[in-house]
Length: 268
Length: 280
Ligand SMILES: [Zn+2]
Image 1: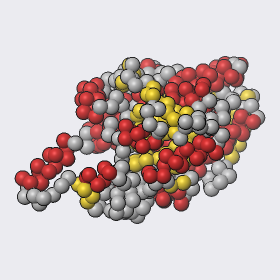
Image 2: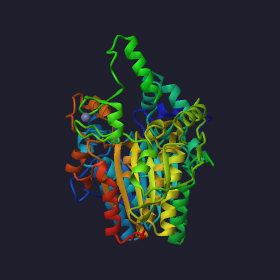
Image 3: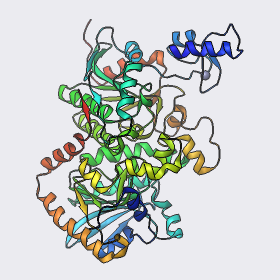
Image 4: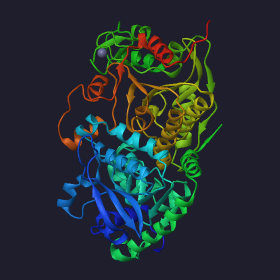
């Protein structure tokens, strides 16, 4: 593990060209991945992919936000900013997993849900809300992993889970540091300062009760050794999935609810 | 109150019309409405029917049966989960200047004789943003309703997440939506009343999860802010974009109800769901 880096240094790492995306990870972590398309209402959002796969022989459902590795891929997947139909596809596949008693593995990697006319017209807020509520009572284990960027509600829509893991340099935040600086200080240029006080690192997430695990990245970041980071993710899943599957589902759901229920700081 | 006073003073010193009385400028039709008239109409624009922002206390007063409101968790105040500079001080000041403890008031009350759990968000407190207190009070309100077999009526008004609470504010979306889901699974009725403005993380959580979703006329409902969308699209959006009528057209609002009909409408919907009013 790297010695301590600032949140800003980690943010730079997450945005390094060549940082692995879900498309790099899937063949190294799973076998027999069959992608499934569409939300059955409107269309097939390319910012979210999903399907069934085998994790060392265990059938699982994989749902992931997709970053592009170059400008063409990024255009195709809308820079990993899902539309409502992306979230509705995710929910459809999660329900399918519930029916066939498959655990769900969500990979989060998004700057946020898409903000635009089409998204508003098709109910971006409703789509995210519905996922959050439905995932809370989905009767099958859910593990979520933040690969790079966990951007706001757009990330949380795949983030209601039994356990959340962060890659070592990944970040999870209510708004981008740039957005934060621009709204609170009316100065987007104070991005770095915002980044360092917002508490968005993997370590912060564990401390605040948002994440339970940190997956170690190779020295210098995930892009330096794709095989190694894939192995680390796989190892984590091979350990965690059976553990969650063994639990009584009602106990698991109660623990899932409690995990989120206890986050917050107040006095009375 | 003092703001209005200072506006009048300012106007006089700036050479404004000496006879000018304090007025409210409608954000929809831009016409000025004399403040006393606006308040008398419970903050509805007489010109275009825009339904303005109400303080929580006034909303409760015009919604529930007189004298039946009992507040829940009235002393809850926010912590400072990410040690954000000046957040604690700002909270202290706001509590003093607004008389509110945070951006939501919850409690139980009778609506047309039906015992109901009610929650009212107040945009006067940090734009109704959702942090630990809003999340906790709303979750508890739903849990209370689930335990006691009560319906929930929630008036939403929010600019989104409380950024000063960082990721903790985001997690309140999960906390509240989870509590709504358990209430729903227990068979409870949840009526959402969207009021001006309902946006961001509140839209993307409990505001969109009602069994029945009502909106007041001309109010703003959205996930992303208009300016954010305009700046990415580099073009102006139509005036009615994200207004209640637009969102109803797109299929996300069951009915648009005027303020003066709200109490009666809520009473009827509660009754039609089998919640019996007590004979008075
Ligand atoms: Zn007007």
